[in-house]
Length: 171
Image 1 (cartoon, rainbow, N blue to C red):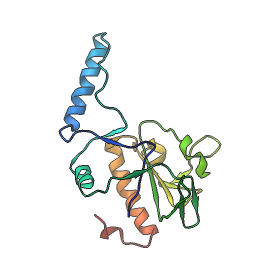
Image 2 (image 1 turned 120 degrees about the horizontal axis):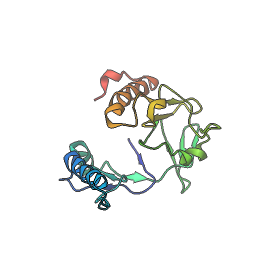
Image 3 (image 1 turned 180 degrees about the horizontal axis):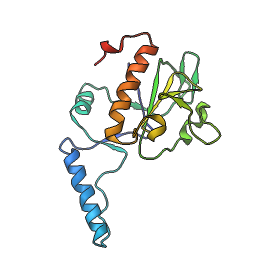
Image 4 (image 1 turned 180 degrees about the vertical axis):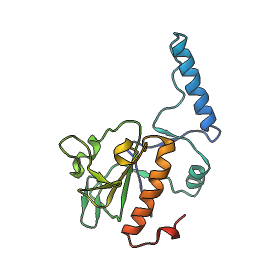
């Protein structure tokens, strides 16, 4: 089972909004700035999810339910704010563009510089925690959509291996 953990409830953009629409919006904003005009307020924000076909499929089968972040790791899982517990084999913490990590402080994985020490995407201090999307320190160009693909595939294979599974058996 997969649990989607998000700071706030995610909002899916309408199905017709795709990468072309977002690129057009970004281009219009850049053009306005270059022309000295105030850019129009974006119709969407970083907290919204583009409903690309795999996202729509997950939504349609009811797999996109999210929970707010858990409080801590325990030997066999995590503890949620309401005190309930869930067994977990692996946690993949993903973000991009800006390395805001304060929300991970309760997990005890931040170093003195406020970062998570990782080795090949895996947290050194918590072997069930994997990080993606925090820039070059979690994978070459992993804060970009182009760079994250390669890193995510490798991390998925590493997680499968760590769980004693054959990574060739996955999607």
